[in-house]
Image (cartoon, rainbow, N blue to C red; front, side, top):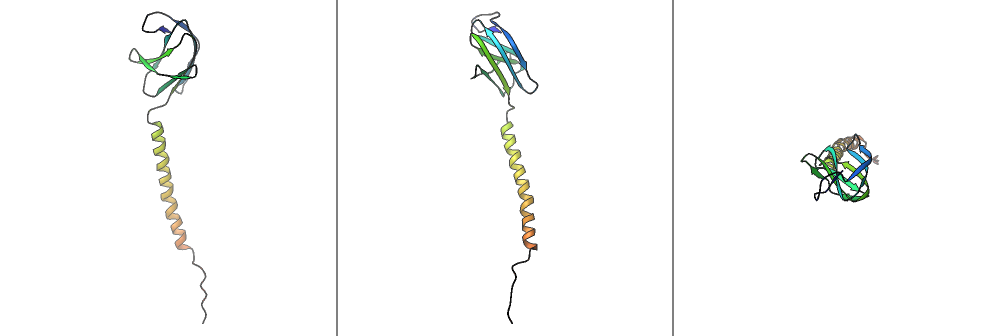
Length: 125
């Protein structure tokens, strides 16, 4: 944990935590003063972070890794990664599946209607 831009050096310790395998992570960090937690995970669009339950920005450190601003004291940090376009891609996939299902169901229903006999017709002579 490094001190903010006003100075250099160690400003605290990471008490526990780490990064998970699926683009998430959590850390418990104690700092003596406001600081920046630098996490050696590649920075990409899509990272989000909370510190003590509040959303905070995820910045780049050294142009490559994650940097999360911390307050003085105990900080409960949670990181999550959601790939950009994931929600739009899921919506397009769902719409495509619905269209394909519709294309299969509508002709099937029309075929059944053509095959079914009409109402009984009674004629008198």
